[in-house]
Image (cartoon, rainbow, N blue to C red):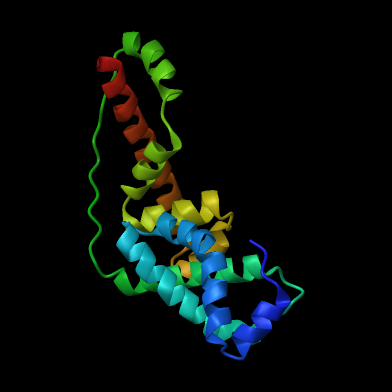
Length: 185
């Protein structure tokens, strides 16, 4: 995604055609970020539109020495974090399922792990409780430190680490369940 400085200047002057062109150029990139933090495509679209409005209103503060793509990404992630904070009051529903496998299934399970595709992993991440999913995405995918995550989500660093560990453990369990069900077929 390459955004020309002239397009940014036109957007600052609130040229509607330029704003639409910026939206068109950045849509898929910003939507991929929103989908990582949202439960479904509709809420991701809603988040995208909210974030894009923030991008347009903050465009005057953009400094050309910072890559525009990184600047937009930061605003979008902050928008998603703000939404998370607003929705945090909802109780998280966590289901922990313990599955034990006999040792004869492990060799078949290892072969099945290689057949899990990216879409299945994405779906498993989406099943995580919202707080753990957000910490997982921020740490593993977006590369933020626990200190940065703690500040963004208004939690302690220890809580951030706990959510990351819980997300990893839950993903491990879900992958084992997915693999085991394939082995049984």
